Image (cartoon, rainbow, N blue to C red; front, top):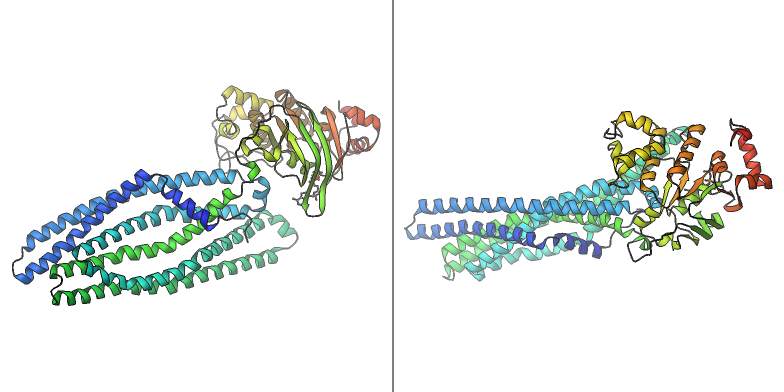
Amino acid sequence: MTTLPIATPRRMRASAWRLLLRYPGQLVAVLSVHGLSAAFGLVGPWLLGNLVEDVAGGAADVTRVAVLVLVFIATQALCSGIAVYLSARLGEKVLAELREDFVAGVLAIPLATVEHGSGDILTRTTRDIDTLARCVRQAVPDVLICAVTVVITIGGIVLLGPLLALPCLVAVPFLWASTRWYLARAHDGYLREAAAYSLITEGLTESVRGARTVDALRLGSRRMDRANRDIAGAYAAERYTLRLRTVYLPVADMSYVLPVVATLVIGGLLHIRGMVSLAAVTAATLYTQQLLVPVDRMLFWLNEIQTGGAALARVIGIECHRPEAHTEGDHDVPQANDVRVRGLTYAYRAGRDVLRALELDVAPGERLAVVGPSGAGKSTLGRLLAGIYRPRTGTITAGGASLSDLPFERLRQQVALVTQEHHVFRATLRENVAMVRPDVTDDELERALRAVGAWEWARPLGLDTPLGAGRVELSPAHAQQLALARIVVAAPHTLVLDEATAFLTPQAARALEQSLQSVLSGRTVIAIAHRLHTAHDADRIAMMLDGRIVETGSHNQLIERGERYAALWESWCRGSEEPAGNIN
Ligand code: ATP
């Protein structure tokens, strides 16, 4: 049902405990102030109990008791306010860190997975994080407050007389059985509910992204059917959890009334037999009554905590996705940047290899152009060289280290892929370029923007101009230059360009590639060449056909050889506006 993993209940519980105990000192402070507040809350009923006894004995000072009750209520309110403030602050801190961990987890997901599970990631980023936020901000602190209040109040009843605490136990079997029944079903129920919402988001995202295809092939009614099916699934999942609540909550409600009645009746009987005072029975009944509010709130939040647990399992499940080889470890950082490909095979679908036993060597600082007819596997090779896909068989090494074994951070320092899809972030021009290296100076930024031919439009705009949707929007050609400027700043050892200049005119693309060459001197550049002038300018060309490299050599060598590349060049020159002789 979902493309990304979900943390096991054990891992989820361990994470929840880690979150709770992240700041033990502050947690103890919060609980202590709540405890103090609950203790002050016990004084009022105790005074009232004594007042009842005094009234029965005919010697009561009602005014004094009323003033004292008011003083203790005010003190309790003050303590409670401080405690709520402290727990809210702690909750926000934990939540902020949880969000940071989540963002780090999302950024570490391999691109190949992001492409296939974007709806699921979106639901986890929005709905699940919101659910979790509600849980961390409200449910967890309130449950802790209530638990402290319950313990202290029961302690108060025991102090009045251990026998008076017994009626409270009447509710335990009902609450225990109904809560067990609920918990056994709720976690899976809420997970199913969240997964059902993921499916809806995924289906809708797909329909919106592929709107033109849907329209052209008249797939509208099929997409509607899918949306209806997904909504029906979500409805069924919601109904299931609703049924659980409609059974559980009334049983729980009934369980609260029993202890109050029982305390009054049993306490009354004990008083008649002279075993406890009238003051103790009155105070114990009031305490039991006072217990209802925290118990009710705890049961109310139990539901929220179940939903929050399911959300947490999905949020931390993102981290479970990190492929083991890509986690931080004691890997050698490659120094030299020679790229070696040995016996590389890759298949999108089992049994249909699109790369077959491919062999390739790229020397440090070399400019290699990969050419070939459409469908030969050039882009697939580019994505494997950038570490986005993992080989089915064979190896790709950079400076002797296998790309599959490099941690993500190091992989990105080593190899970067630039395609024709460029995202302009909602940030200033400076931030958009400098995000890959925040310590970059303005001079370096200018040099990078000049190298990609962007300075003439970037200078009048200013580095601090906000870009992105709803602000200054760049044309696709300018966005492409921005993406390349980012790469110049990042300066990876090896750069894989796949249609990185597709939005520029052929002349502008060639000029940009030539100026990039001077900026990236000493770096290895592997260019997937859809326009053959890129191949013409490269140090070496690798001609691909049907998932293999069939010819390698310089432009002149391959033209002299007069085989496949020569034929491709001829047909490209005939098809392009520039005659072969003009490209020099
Ligand atoms: P072009 O010049 O048209 O971009 P290419 O040489 O870059 O072609 P690839 O895009 O690597 O070729 O495609 C190689 C083969 O893999 C093709 O048969 C293509 O249909 C298939 N292919 C590419 N991407 C996918 C995908 N995401 N899922 C399944 N098959 C794919």
